[in-house]
Image 1 (cartoon, one colour):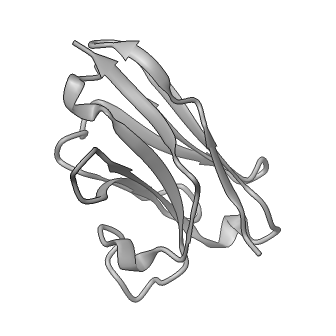
Image 2 (image 1 turned 180 degrees about the vertical axis):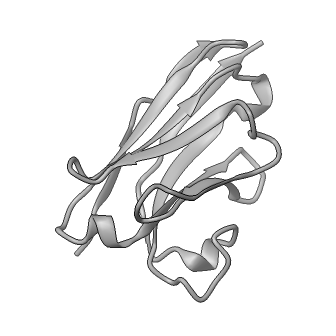
Length: 125
């Protein structure tokens, strides 16, 4: 069984920064792409960023491009999301997920087979 545990969320002022971490259990972490999604109250869960198994390739939603950076450390079984220049509209619960279904687009929730419990990010304006 794979477990994903997010941390690093919190309350920050607009323009500030946060770094989210997602620690994964299991010995196959480095074999999978990983992604971050977010869900604001009353809205659908949306794609934020994804990273290939090696870290060589990354994808970003247009809304966060240039402000957020996804990275991973396979030796630590951890994926990160560095969030800079935060805006009020970034407020959401952030989830990490394992890309265990490569037949689907990494932008789609269908590409992910395991999810963390989420961490709250609140940006005050």
